[in-house]
Figure 1 (tube, rainbow, N blue to C red):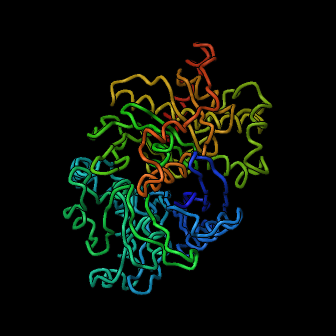
Figure 2: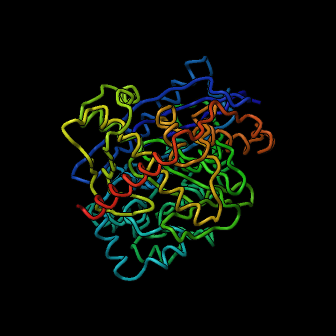
Length: 495
């Protein structure tokens, strides 16, 4: 058998390829950033062809860097930015429009109209989701309504829709496979998480022809083999999961009640709820975690739109740091936040507030406020948002959180992780390998081709690198929480 698994991790700001060995170690990594387009306020787009070129490029780079060929790859697993919407021509493979990114808010008014029609309950019952511009369904509708000729071509069966995983599989297989997995399908607002099928009523509601939709498969099976110039030989494409579900699996949160938070561009807190969906009463999402064999696992999810990207904004927008790695040192130049609270609603607010129109706010600035206070408040804002979701999750699940597994780029920030433990009053556990998103895709692909024999075999590979325990005095934490609650109130009420 070939020796390695290749994970393609297609994220919001970069494409990465990571090669793992049988022990779950990353032996080669390549990464490339790609262009972000902001054509109007609140609009965010990517070039699908640049996504493919960057992903294919880093795959080739990671393989060649350690002297491998396609023959050394046992399988490919894909994990991807979710909800981002691509529509392309079925014959030529040419996108009809740039990809509309999950952060994009252009369909907010249309979402409001759906709410006004009293459709919130029906959509939540079928999909587990709230009505929001975040999800793919209204983005597809926008493309069909606004790209000349798109609706006619779609209704004639000539267009295909896919989230980024579908696009990559299409390209990898030379247009031979138009598929997605249940985890990505559950993020479209068009998939019934109870029947595990595209919902005809929702397709009709949004005016999306069923012929556009990919075939929905499990998260761990062979979908097809590569037929592109990247691989001289046919390599099985064998695992797919949306990035947050992949991270949940990569963290080995396979038991009901286990929780992880990924600190990436956004932050995404997921709790495995087992084989039955729990519909949230506290503004969280119900989503499909994965399907392996005939077993479907569900999760509760809280989505924070702006997590690590607030650090990018400090770098690119405000210019108070030159690289993201500098933020922790800048924040440590002050002993506390000095009364400054940063609510980073730069693209609206996700769970549990779901305010599409909220704008980012920094509260409590005085003449004594320094760049250090702003940096510290930005990091603390990430932790406070996570705390709000944990509170909602505890109410829905009826359990008290005792530990939180963490991953993603910002999880390397010790100040942030320590503060997170303080405001949660729970242990925060960082794994030895923080690339859990790619690792989840790797594991799903490896299981499909027998590279690993079982989930139990994989579990033994997970190791903790550091545990952050709550240390701040209770009174101090209480005061911090009160300050945050006031900042949220002022933000939402535009005070």
